[in-house]
Image: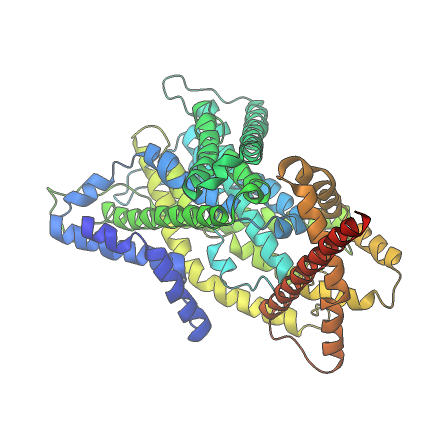
Length: 581
């Protein structure tokens, strides 16, 4: 067993290389990294079952939810927050809120309604033909679990440089969806999770759930933000902590994990707290770390996240042998109950609830905001819709915490398990084909060309180069007016960030800002102009990396020139002092 854990604990890193080889080099899109992870878990589970004759599968049925929520989940969520590109995240923030918050709530409500109807029709039966009536509390908790999605398969097929807004919306919605779905689950659990004192359902029950949702949401946000600010100020004031990279890594991670623990203990969302804390630390606290500390912190957090995800997918694969034991005897293996009718119906419910959470919301907000200002076309909305069909590790882990071991709870848990496997392997294989088809439609459409607002990224490096050329033809005030009119929220945040937040939270920011401002001014006059001259002469940069390399080389030259200028100034001052004496 130890040998297998050592072999597969870093499997995701190897699977990423395999996934990249299959998709980019061999053009194979029928499987992706998550599906490969599950298949490896199935193989490991099969080997263990053959060796132990089913005894190991019996042990996996006792899934300790505390191990998941306190050991496996925090590094995964924290890595997502700490590695978040805030520039991209704020770029599609409006759509992220619409789909990530409202879309998740709508998906939860639609799933709960259709599941109640299916249960009232008495269609839920076990494989042995036994009629099962699901408890109302189990249906609500099940619906909360089903509101959690997994968009990894979609993200691997979208080029963030070519389709920046689409990538930002899918990535942002996935991050927010994880947090919101767990908040919904906790809000429902606080109301109906006590089996010793079950709550009766009244007309105002939905309002109680909504009230708990907002309490947990804003409470978790506040705690996560508080610990992010505290860690940033400590690293800013206590500069002796930056002398050792190990101390830096430990300090940054412990503040995030402490926020998680506190929220979990007071029945708030630790996931949301550690996510917000990681985002804040990534944008502000990381600027107070040493160069070695920055790299060490990022690598350490990503390593912990990869190991945690690898362990979780292996466990899901091994757990599949609880439901079918062809290699074990009847005395050694007890097959857990499940209902194929409920599994098929809930798979269809995933599509149905997602339709309301994406297409219906898009239609409503396009009317509110105006169709011209709604900068997502129908093909991109279709991609976002399909990206959220898959149910992943969060849904599986949440359903394991449903209290009780009766037939209703067992059916609920087995249904989520099969939906995770079916959508990950089945839809995860179809989604890349759908994305490829949709992107080709966008690219070849006269209506949605490469300059359409839904595709074009005004914050990208390429557009910055184009803007520098247009400045020769348009007045600067006119350009600023257009930018402010198009991106009020993003510009407001960046303006507040530059003028206030960075000065409050970053050590010696004034000096750093002065140096960066001088470099940017010189880059506009030297680097960008050289780029425009090269473009006019027929040269086109091969990639964004080459542009960044040119900028870095220019910055190095500017630093050398600045140092030489300072030395000349110092020598002139000394000469004038000598002449005065």
